[in-house]
Amino acid sequence: MDKTFLMVKPDGVQRNLIGEIISRFELKGYTLVGAKLIQLTEETARSHYEEHEGKAFFHSLVEFITSGPVFAMVWQGEGIITEARKMMGKTNPTDSSPGTIRGDFGVNVSRNIIHGSDSPESAQREIKLYFTEDELVSYEKEI
Ligand code: CMP
Image (tube, rainbow, N blue to C red; front, side, top):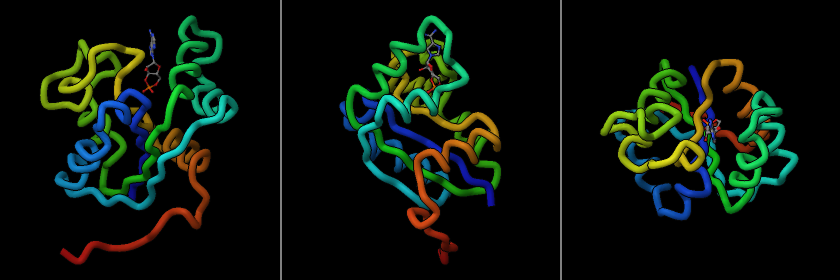
């Protein structure tokens, strides 16, 4: 089954959006298989965003993502990587449609509430960066 890595960023945690975000993915029918509230180190943040190293916003991105706790999650479901990106909305909340997480709650590209893996390769890499195998559960829903 497909898995993706989703993370409520420090702005989402501070604005009490963890419950709202979990609820959207639960109501959609996806399965939460791992979750934790953590404070990122600079090393993990730089590793997570390594593809953006060298860009003008890289330093502020690392500074922001380490500025407070984040809520890291692994979700499971058919086609979840692309579907979660649709539910999140565009990277820049001003381009995101109402009904998406960023469209409903975000105002700024650097404070855009949530991160989600953009490909199967990213999902695999990001899940490994944040979770050990024994921090993830494996189960089938019965209802
Ligand atoms: P995210 O999906 O976490 O992946 C990379 C992040 O970089 C992105 O969300 C934005 O928060 C951030 N980002 C992308 N473009 C810019 C930009 N032009 N200025 C500031 N931050 C940006």
